[in-house]
Every structure is written in C-alpha cells, then in structure tokens.
Length: 256
Image (cartoon, rainbow, N blue to C red; front, side, top):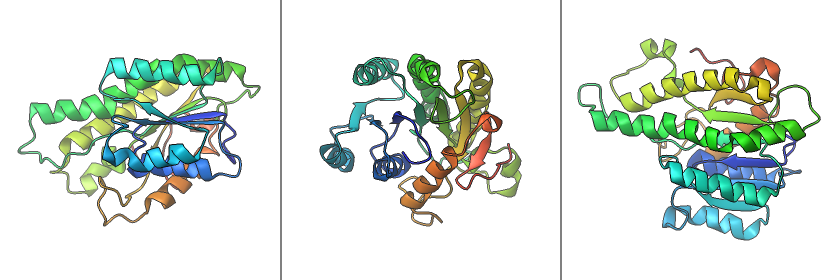
C-alpha cells in the first residue's frame, strides 16, 4: 500500500461502487496491504460477483459478511477479521456502507428517516465499536508516535450533502434522510476524533465527490476509479492535524 504503509485495511460496503473501487485500488498498489478485508451484506448474491472474482485472484483479499444494520453480523465480522489477523491489529477501517433515498421533504416518513440513520450513522458507530480493540492493538504495536492511517484510523465516507453550510446553496427538498444522516455522521466522527485520540487512532470524514455509481447516477463528475485513487492519496498524507477533519477527495477542507 504505497504511501499508506498499513498492514491491514477493512472496507464496508465493498461489493460495488466506491467500496469496490477502493478495494481494487488497494490491491493494485505497488506495495499492497498484507490483508484487505472487503465487507458485503450479502456476499453470495449476484451483485457481489465482481468482488468474489477478485477474491479468487488475490490471496490477501478476504471477503467478510457484514450487515451494518445488524449488531450480531458486525460482531461475527469482527471475530472473523481477528482470526485472520492472528494477534495483530487492524490499521485502517473505512466505513463506506450507506444508503441513499431520494424521498422529498414533504413526503418523507418515519420509516425513511429511521432506515437512513440506521445504516448511515448507527452502522458506522457499531462497526467502529466492534473493531476498536483491533484498532487500539494496531496503534499500540506501531512504532509511530503521531496519528496516521498506517498506524490506526477510522475513515467515515460522508458527503457534501451532509454539510449544513452548503444546504443553502443547493436544492434541499430531496434526499432528506440521506442529508440528515450524513450530517449526523459528521458529528459522530468529531466525537470519535476526540474520544479515540488518546488511543492513537485518527478519525476523519471524506467526501468522495460526485461519482458515477448506482447511488450517484451516471451524471457524476468522477469515475469510481478516479475517486478511489484520489481518496487513497489523501489518506496517505493524513497526520495529527487532520484528526476530526472534513476533507474532499482532493484533500481540500469541506464546510461543516
């Protein structure tokens, strides 16, 4: 993993879109991680076929079943990863899994909001909690003194649509659960950055750009490969000063 230097990386929502793109990019690096854990809610279904094809080609890629809305699934996934690491810690956790709903302000209902928060906020919270012991272990094992992704880090994939400041500049009557849940994820990340700093774990948010995916649509400005490459480039440069930061795929600061 050129630039990142970590031994192990875990990506949630890795069976398609940006998550799959990040996995591909990690595997293609000149010095890839010893372990890449690619999580999928349903690893046996057709939409996970591309990821299964990669698993057959790369011995350092492990497909892990993880449903971010199920505490039992999350705990089972953490146990699976711990077993593969054989006593070592997890260097980098990328909380990428998320859902997008175009429901409008006038029609959004309780179920829409609950589903959005359950996946986009509670999911990253529970996943981070479950893998915290492995992240702490990685930080303790490292000879590095400062914060970095090569030591131990939690990276939450957010969006400019979760920026409260930018809401006044855009049409905000659609995707209400997504916008509100991403704003909440931003606050969660801030809390993590304060709470886990003493453990040596860097926590920050990144906006991946408007990407051509099933979620972002084909009007996006970036391809999946472009976004993934840029994101990993940003992650490789993170340090203490970026703990709690909200950056975009280019490394520029995003407004809260």
